[in-house]
Image (cartoon, rainbow, N blue to C red; front, side):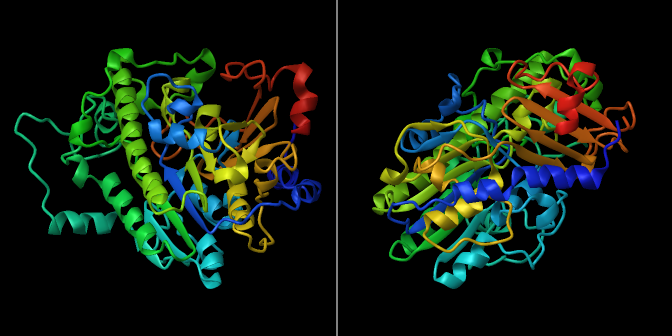
Length: 468
């Protein structure tokens, strides 16, 4: 079967962003516009490790409460399973190939219109705090930018308490230089800092200062936490929160064996469970800091007038498909948390199961704030869904991972993944088998949700694969 890449991409993008869908979703919504927006990002956050998504082990009371107060999206998909492209697709409403950010290290182009480029001239106070992955010194329209270097300056001028001698802390993070069990924190070791001095708490406090300083103005706050990205950071007080023996350990399938990166092949089950316990602990620490920000909004009397959105910038594979990373098109990597809290406007405790993409968040924010929509973006506003003015949204979702020349389209029933296979898997995750050549993966995600059986070579499914 011949498939030409430009045609494939055009078909996929057009299918995900048809004029018909935009017309159906361009509905008048009768609700009082929000004054502010707070957009919170967890880094590498899997939907599988969040109480609101059904996890009975992890403690995430603040995000769970946010879901009770708002709408949880059960089928929300990132447009790239890697940090920089995913984040900049959200902040522009464009797919990575159109935003100009397709690789982890790609600088965010100055000519692109970010959410802050749009809102700051309209009089909104704007700030981006924490991880931004701009890969440049530009603020991209944000009046205030606080990032890791500001935290390091804070630590220099405010020397932290020295931990007790008996407390063992995590070594310096050296991914791919150290064995995987060390840089993935299989020993579940904390940072060298107590809660009050750790990086996530610092970002939360800076966010609270911004909210308090601008509570009489309209504002847009973009807040990016570093957790739970490896090495799965958490402060000293959080050590030993989760017993590795109690951690779930997915087993994967034979379908996965061809694609396991060499870097993970020597991990023992004990080490894998230790890694997962570190991840769970980091998520609990993240949740605590999200709670600080949500409480600040409520204390300032801004809960009802502020649109709050929580997302993971993509998912994460916790031995799902026998690996610890994202960078793939399996569900655990491309499906991510999306919770929207909108006060009485959107209702409480709702679950929305329609297929959605993270490029949809840019136009959602614009419409919810009552501003004019921006043309030439791929996103479709979620406001008609949130206000129950429609039960239609997307028929499919699209994601791309350009380091491996890979693209995905997913419908309610099917998922198709195409890769040129010109190289072994990139970014340090080589399998050792060498380039695979052009590969097709087709899964019936209704009947095979764990994606264990590739149907692409089955003659019975060639028509559906060609259609996708």
